Amino acid sequence: MQKNTVVLGFSDYRLQASKLAAALQANYAEVHVHYFPDQECKLTLPTDLPGHVIVCRSLHAPNTKLVELYLLAKALRDQSCEKLTLVAPYLCYMRQDKAFNPGEVVSQRWIGAFIADLFDEVITVDAHLHRIDSIEHVIHTGRATTLSASHLIGRYVASKLDAPMIMGPDEESLQWVKQVAEPQGFDFCVAEKTRKTDSDVSIKLPAVNVQHRDIVLVDDVASTGNTLIEAAKLLATRAPNNVYCALTHALFVNDAYLQLMALGIKAVWSTDSISHISNRISLAKLLAKDVTL
Ligand code: R5P
Image (cartoon, rainbow, N blue to C red; front, top):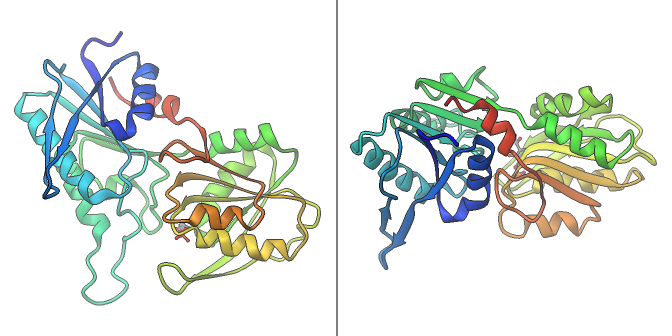
């Protein structure tokens, strides 16, 4: 058992954080959060924490969580915690990486700075970094890494299907699609996407024959689900055998998942980055290997 390390979680992420603790052979402890009627919160920390605290929580639906992270990290520093690691499989605000119109705030930069100020080490998975090379350009702290779940997804797909075609719904997904497909020897291709609004996208499928093939749509994240939904609608007109979806971060806001399933998708497979009915792939071992003890 690691004596100088604890994984500290929140009740909404207990399953994943305690799996990480088990993979690290470290103890698991939990922060208690009380919400007042006016929506302020009060955090109560376990006592006698060791020198290295690993905070584990994905940062979807982020605004409240960011305040809680701030209060927690400041209190831990105040207790003379020597090393603070954040394991956040889903890192929020990474898609707002550019001012598309005058006056827009580039949230990626400022949320990155906010997190860097609180933690010595930051570990995330398939962060949405399209216009920069490395997470270290966003989070300037001792160590920041973004891991990829693609090989885990590839292996999972291989355990379920023979010779599927892996298809990305847009050009940006090529990085994940290749990493899923190539090690398994699967065919792969990507579609083209034009985003008009948050929830309005149009897709142009690549000129490949999908007839009688099992197609797996692969993306990093599904939010409104419309990217996958539009791709699935178009695929349905081309007589594939079955269509599946595989992704790292199953945000699936509102009824996105039901809308997707209503199109006759055979199965959706996701990592447990965000708790969701489609979770099939645990990230615990991948994350544990990257934590420096
Ligand atoms: C965008 O570039 C991402 O890779 C995803 O395709 C996108 O964020 C999915 O969003 P939605 O589910 O809202 O279409």
